Length: 50
Picture: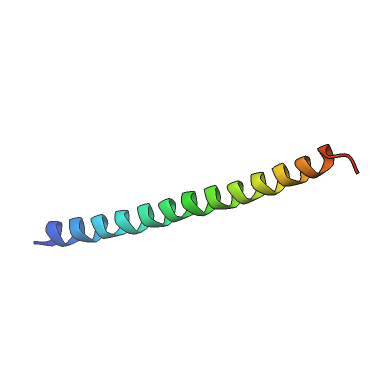
């Protein structure tokens, strides 16, 4: 019985760690996309003559 309880606890911890990792990946991608869009807009502004 102790093995089963420890196994369930380990699985729950695994899902929590996986959730945090997934959230970090999504947040990092969101921030990178924003930075790239901002850089592209600035590059576009510099290309256009005044």
